[in-house]
Structure formats: structure tokens, C-alpha cells
Image 1 (tube, rainbow, N blue to C red):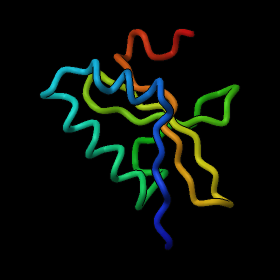
Image 2 (cartoon, one colour):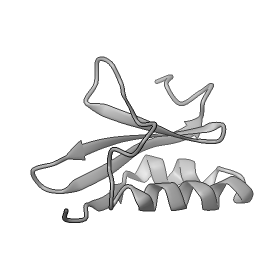
Image 3 (cartoon, rainbow, N blue to C red):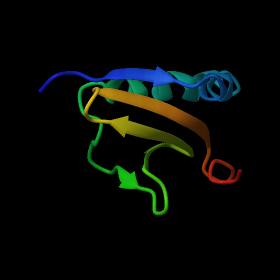
Image 4 (cartoon, rainbow, N blue to C red):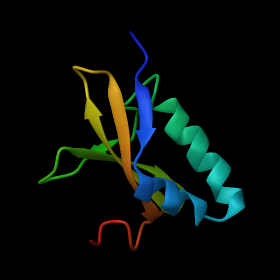
Length: 86
């Protein structure tokens, strides 16, 4: 299985910077693991969107997968209470 390219949107990178340091490293590791397996155990497809989410503690990582081009794009990173709000 080929590995995927993992990209972060500008807004996701900014949200990642605002995460406390102790949680940030775990989130970065989780995002890096998406390159090898974009649909890991525990992933959920969001209804109404072509997006997926994974958990890391109290944080959620929302991302899109383009299988034809082997790209995973992280769209949002945030606390579980706020990440789904627009």
C-alpha cells in the first residue's frame, strides 16, 4: 500500500499552534500516522460531508481523503466541544 501525502490547511495549522504543548505532540504523531493508514481503527465518517474524524484525547482532527491522488488534507483541529461549529 502506497503512503499518502498529509497536508494541513492554513487554518488547521493555526489551530494546531493554539493547542497546549503537551497535547500538540500527540496530535502531530496522530496526523503523521494518517500517511500510512488514512482510515485507522476508531475513525468515523461524518454525515453530510466527505470528511472523517479521529480522536486524540479531548481533541478532534477532521480531514478529507482523496484516494485517487493519495492525499489526506487536515481541515480542522480543535477541542471536541468546539470543532464541529462553524
